[in-house]
Length: 255
Image (cartoon, rainbow, N blue to C red; front, top):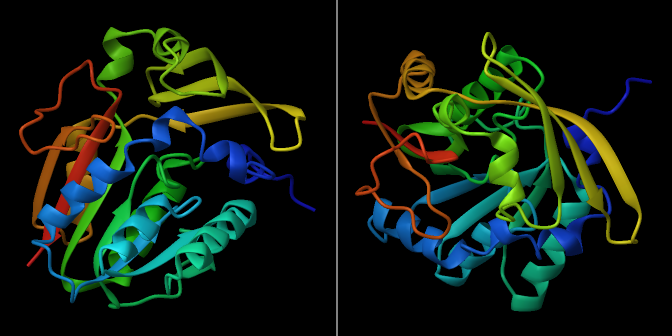
């Protein structure tokens, strides 16, 4: 049996704690931005990649949008389904690996926020498979909105200082090495799950510079790619990407 990767184990028994994390508290503002980007068109079909406990899916469904949520974590999907039922929302939450999606030419819009799979994979090829599968799931005329780790940040700042600021909430991170040759951060992440049990994971995450993201998306046929800073709950096209931004917001379009 293959050993589970850290991103497969991290969210087991973590649905309740996940909703308490600092980084998930910007849902309303982020959905406001998504609505503006899709021009409040209720006819679009949206897929939420790495939907977690369904925070964006549920908020957008409340606003009248048709949305499908997918995630690798069954724990988070169970929590998402419970929340959707509580609100009486008709959302399909499906258990899929973003590297192997069954959809083709089906959605008008894809969102993948708060590192919803990409860029957590252990190889660049696996990360690209996520972008490729999202691209295949989208119609020819479509929009793809996602956030990812900003490779400019660790060139100028300590990743440990950022995590130590409390922005990341309950989890504790200890960055052991940022590899300039691969732009991967190797760290130890500690969490306490919903049952009060502490877990420790050896993780590595890929940071991307804007030119890499642009090139990857262009190879998939996206013709207009805009990249901005990603402020929690306050996404904006006026927020030009800076070296101080831990994440970047990417908006890719095909016409």
